[in-house]
Length: 215
Image (cartoon, rainbow, N blue to C red; front, side, top):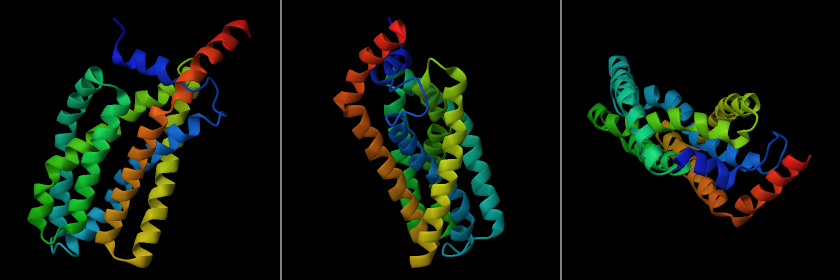
């Protein structure tokens, strides 16, 4: 019986080259989701030591707790992926992390941020680990080219997070910037859900496979 990853590759494999327009909605969706990690990395210390009234030591402790939790939860998301699909697992982890970002934006004391660490670790573990194979499978027939999408995602997510931080701090404070990051993540989940439900994506595969065999 084929596993979830092979089913995923066959069902929505968009193309065999990087220049196709069909690949970029997938990449943009993952970049929007990944940008939440970058936004959090910027605003977490500012919120904890600012609106939440914490100390720099609290920032170090919170980051350390989340890092330890991520190690455990990465294995959990690997199990979830085998039971569902990469897209479902990524969307679920992103929704959890967006909930954390909203909580961070509402935090008014350090204890609230500490209580959010399990949610942060659970969501971040999925966002960190799951997109790797997901992006590689976008161009599964060319492994090296598929892996290049990982680097593209890193730079695109970094650029989006910088834009979100600039806009958020220009119109409001760091707490609302965290909420803006959550909104970007939700947009990524919505886009990912939409493109996986499009019948045109699935219908393209047999034609592409046939053209490759006869080309």
